[in-house]
Image (cartoon, rainbow, N blue to C red; front, side, top):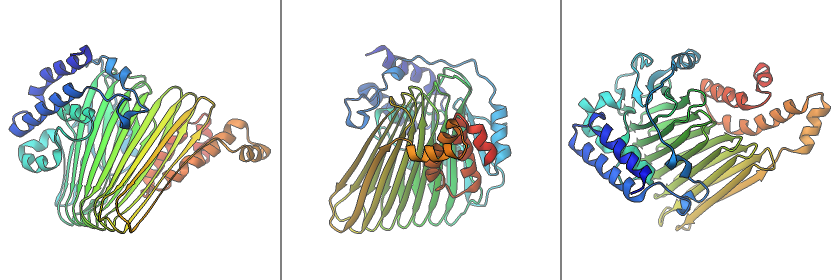
Length: 436
């Protein structure tokens, strides 16, 4: 056994007895099976097709330790001051009651940290928790070591008007944290859930976040994930949604931080007339790397999926997008559209796009497209001729490219938060912020 895998086995040995729900027999067994799978398979490597363009070797070789936590209270207070909603805050993988404020929820809506939910909702949680066979081996490591996360349950017909915010902050500069969020939406319910990942400057922490969603008939869930980890951090995450008849799932994935970020997003149609919108925006600079891997399973007839991801790569950064659409036999009436657009800001920046369509039904409408380009010289010339310096002119064009994705976020406060985050990354972002 390699030393890096043994280190994770040792971590499990130290943590398992203290994890929330450790006394729940089925959960303890699931965690043990998940660790066994990870130890057997190890870290994914580029020899696996789904990981062809992403190497986790530096992550596998890294050592992590707790301690040295810095305060994140001011940053979280600033987030809460700018927006309304229901707030659960997790710091270094643990629920922070002092920084959280779930507020007044409508009857039938339950929003709790998993560490508190086990005592009353263990069997309901079991239905959504997942098992060791799910996803990649990294997903199994998450199941084995997840220390906390959110439990969101919406009863039939319940509508939560304000967003539910899950703020996940890394305060320790070299720690590893695993979070698991579960969202169950019964028939006709609706809510917006925001996952926001932040870290202290220059922290080289590792975070894996798994989100499992179950939407019953006619449920509507909008999910926004905003990844703003430190530029030295590693972030792995997977989102898996199962949709019932007539449900609508909207996913916005905005990835702006981390030295390496990998996002796996999958949705499965368990009945007819489901709709899914997957919208993504990613920005990487220096030598950072981001990888989005999506799967939409059209297992049932008359379902619609629209998917659009935009990436901006500067310096020697690398952006990867793989989008797989699977149309099963009998899934007639499928409407599936996928698009990926990449903007390269330097000669060394790189983009890889792999659209994949597998169609086993006849009466379908499916299309995909991918573009890779640079800033338009004529547009730059025009802006310069209007008196703008080169930095400002470039920033305007870059922001306009990103805005096509940001505009799809329906909530104005959430859209404004993402706009500000994007502008902050640009060399002349302060000027754009003043003009906004």
